[in-house]
Image (cartoon, rainbow, N blue to C red; front, side, top):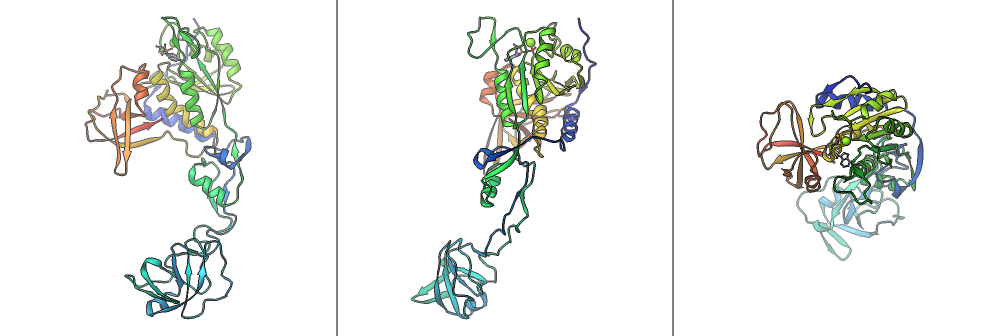
Length: 410
Ligand code: AMP
Ligand code: MG
């Protein structure tokens, strides 16, 4: 039998810190850059900042429908309506004359000389005269955002390393970015190991199971900004695993599942060792996912995740996703948690940080979480009813209904 690596079992916090340290090392490495059309950039990581191409707003913008005027004058009495301005129109009559107001629409440029907009709801109009009848006196600046108040030309609206979501897409569009520079997605080799596995499209014999982990891992890889490549299932054999690793190590990150426990045919760690791997940890005090392995081959980082489907999901979210996001240049690497009120007591196991499949629901008042009944880390059906994993800390003696708990988000 081949040698196995020295055992290093860490607490959850220590293992997370270990991954974070390695993720940090990746921050300044050189990465390939692609130009993506703006819409295709949703979910991608910015390789260059989005900068304002001109002041935002570019002109003093009316934020209400109403009358642009001088605050001191409209508070004192009736004004004369000197014209109308729609959004997209330019005022061409020069400085607003004393005693004048201009009817203005939301989004239009306030004419020079006006210092506020009296809201339509607060004025009375009769013919060409307008009077402020609303509650409190108007102050200069009211209902106007001055040019450059939101951002000055050249200032950065979204930094390099930020993932493009809805607001960054809007900012890029507003600043004229038809394409944006994004980092290339890191390529992730996904290797499922196990003699019992058949592919999703094959008919399993009664004692076989379908390889679901490669697919859940591919989905998690995509969500964390990586490009998954699914390798053929690897049998529980050291030489076969070594061969598969030789090919997989050409990718940017290697993720294996199965074969990292203590069984006679769990040979993944031996194969890794034979390919020159250094191990940062070979287990963590978490449940599910205890046998998770993290280390570095001569070519790059690898994770060996346990094969039970919930262990695979949890350990990816906790450890692989943060490293992968960092590999992809993302500055906020995670993992991602929400805080929610627990609706039902959950059982703790002292000495283990537990991640229990749970259903998170939220509304404007906050988030609630209810554990999903499960039969251990192989219970795919329970996972399918869940949308996160409620966390019980290693040191907790009890986690009661009504308490606020963390929920690991997938
Ligand atoms: P292992 O980590 O290899 O000991 O596997 C633990 C459990 O997870 C066993 O019941 C395996 O059959 C199951 N398993 C391992 N790999 C996969 C996979 N790729 N897809 C689904 N289940 C798996
Ligand atoms: Mg196995």
